Length: 530
Image (cartoon, rainbow, N blue to C red; front, side, top):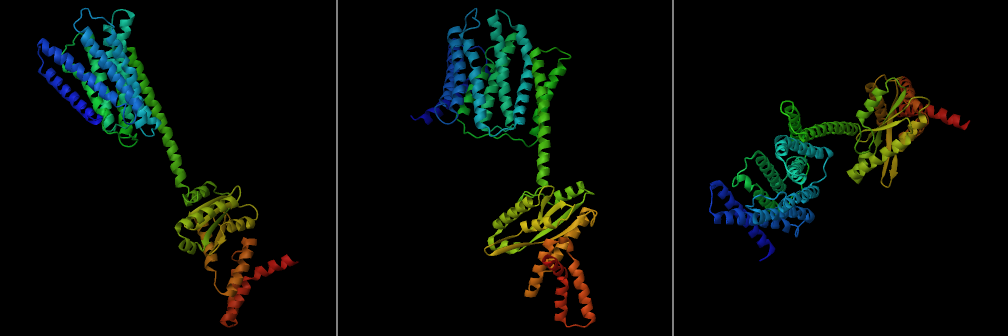
């Protein structure tokens, strides 16, 4: 027989044995000595041992071997302790307490805790701190309620020497910690643990709950052998045996949905209920301490959530004000900066790339995006301190420069930063600027004026040789003194009106208009030679 077949047969035997014992408890009644021997002692403990061996065998194959070694060792310790009790201590009067069986049962908890934590760490993806706090809140809440309901009764019924008292108290404490860990892991997963973890959680929860009810009934002197309560431990080990060989799934801590608030709120209310209940009926001090810790963890969670929300708001605001491609501010950022600096003397410059569409069509959109990113970085690195660069969208950029002094050199440098030439392409720029608040009192009028001047410059470009020469001279003039923008156009309009009055031929009118546009160029050239 191969290992897989043995495993399947073992699981079937465990499930059948559990089913037979469930029927036995459901029927009830006193059985013969043979029935008691073979069902209540042999079948019960044999099924426990087989289930523990199946869990321990999981450490031989697959992943998470250390975790399953811990879980399997815990199950085996408990099964061996129960078997020792059935063989050696069954029917003895007086019953020795504490005994070797108690030592084995108490040793169950440490490897069980380690197994739960190791499985949670290996299966959970990256977990937020609030998710871990949800787990702590859930665990503390369950522990507080359990301590309020059962711990006081168990403590009051505890008697004997120090070792006996310590043993009696160790059981409920161990069960509360185990149940708290299970609930905590479920809370961390957002209450969507997956099939395998649901079986693991159900197994350990069944064990802790059965143990707690057993101790409570013993303390209250209401325990009777042969009820379904006695099957709780067997059912727990059977669930763990099935879980050990169930398909694995990596868990993800869910942070969305109603569980984000509902679960911690309900657990917090449960912890608060323990504190309120204590005003009428006194509960054990441990329950008060656990419920107080639960409320404290809930308050800490609210503080962390508030801090995270503030960080998310800052990040969202930064993304809303930033151009994703270039990292520059966008139009929304520009409008906000203009509003914040209202009344301050500034120069608003709008730029529009010439030749970008052809570049995009020739080299593709990824190359176009890279060019925009490159030019945006060049613009930001050129304008200097006290200035800000923006991408308005498409191939339009903007700069906000200090308004004091002569901005000619700064504007010319910014325009040059947005120009690039290479093999098969040339990117130039058209621009328009406006002084704030001298020429425009608000952001809307400033943008309209700068935009109009930019497109006036762009649309004024011609393709004839004479026009290209004139444009070249005018471009040099604009780089030297951008404040002369529009002056040559006014002179040209006056010259055209005069030529039309004199009824000059059309080609002479055009030549006269170009000469008038070069009016300021001639003066600049004359000054540079003198």
